[in-house]
Image 1: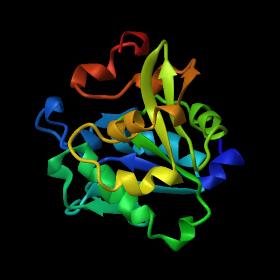
Image 2: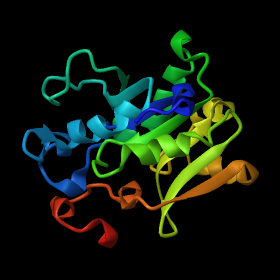
Image 3: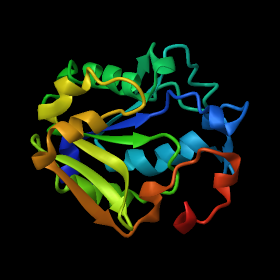
Image 4: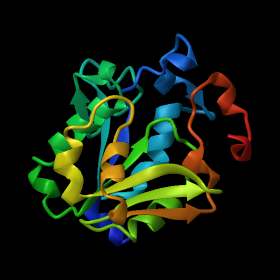
Length: 204
């Protein structure tokens, strides 16, 4: 459910990775539930929380092959092979230039392989967001997603690299960082292997 606070937070769903631990199949198109895919199920939960959201995909991705509507708002990265950090950097460079996001005070980063997270969890975290904050959902003391980056940090995030994503930015601004405990195990449950579809959230 979208909250008033999440109107000023743009959602970024990272879905450009190659997921080599999953096997030969493109993890994003793996069947999930009766009719959906892993990526489409994640989007169905996540996107209802935001007035503005974008899926970060590879430059060459075909939305039809990903089972996504052709009007899906996407940011394309040509650097997906360089790691999650490069995809994040391209995403933040893109949203920083969009006129329609000038009133957004923060961006919530989520992963395209997290179909168990509850929408209310995301909306609840957005309540704490502002331009100066760095926020992260946790479950049982474990850091998870979303991670929310105030607009103040967007320029720094255009320079992140590797698989660390925004962790270096968080570590450089410890006084702005806050972890928000959640009762939702889905904030820590992503799908890396086929077996993750059947393992209970509490054991992830």
